[in-house]
Length: 210
Image (cartoon, rainbow, N blue to C red; front, side, top):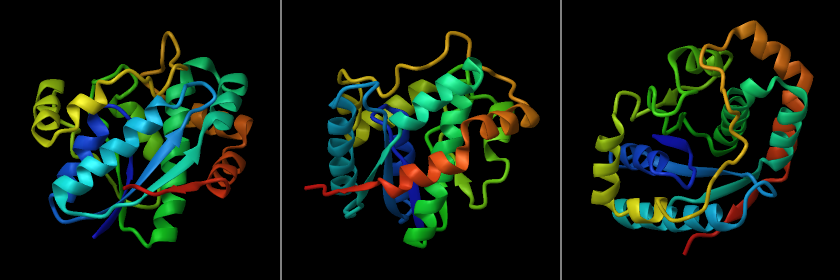
């Protein structure tokens, strides 16, 4: 089994990746690079996290770096501000689908957990998944934060994940928690989501992990 993992520099996604790698999944990591809205620290954290996960699972997973700053800029300018998080995750999933096809992978891993952040609700996850053509695995969906932190400490990713370096600083003050399909379709047209996804993948970089 080969899976694409959407990896941030936070606590959740490395643990989600580990749980699937432990099930003998071969993982290809994809990191959405939010520069220029952030500095270089999240990328450095992600490279360290991949190295730790590879060592812990005796794997040799590779890492794709996907430019996401341009997409974020367009979303903030053209879509309703409350939809920023949902639209960003929609783009991340669409990017992961293209990488999955390229890598002949069977699915996608995310670190989502119900209610961990305001925008991670069943309604939002349902809308984000609409039209997604490959399985999305969410190993942490029913975990509380303490359970995730416990595993992160056990596998050695926690101390890296909590280092300074915010992955995103564009979270709206009041993110949408009950997205509607029609509303998201309208936003997708406004931002030209197909172009943003294709452009991001076209400019992807492969990062060597030592």
